[in-house]
Image (cartoon, rainbow, N blue to C red):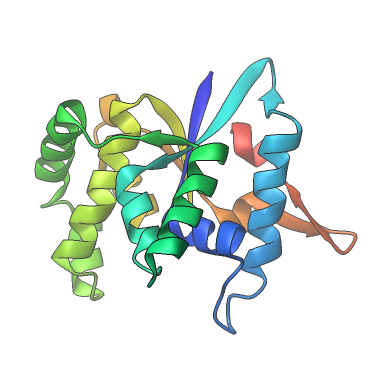
Length: 184
């Protein structure tokens, strides 16, 4: 089985079905992606895929819930549909290795210069490390920072990161998953 991690923005669009006015097209794209994995049980090229959510992503997602009732409801929904991946000792080790290797790289320096905070970068590194520690093969996000991190890491720690806009495309007025891009 191949684990596919999704980032918090996809949970907001796909589970809560909320977006700001410039991101409203992300809701149907994310729904198409989630349905693709759930309907097919995502069996492509004889590989079975399972959607997963790192606990850091879950925490980011739940920050938008103001009531305990909403948190419980959304947490139950997540646990029913996704495998929740723990940030554990192995993830902490990967986090340290990946962060220390990448922090001086040109890619990460460029992110910092563009305004990405150190706290935001650390959270993205934790998401990446959690995925790696749980042997995920893919992270799907709308966050260019996670893509940049994946480009800066050692080959031994590589996980494929795909951007939602490149993975889900419009065809005949509906959104479909570009399977060729998914498995590339």
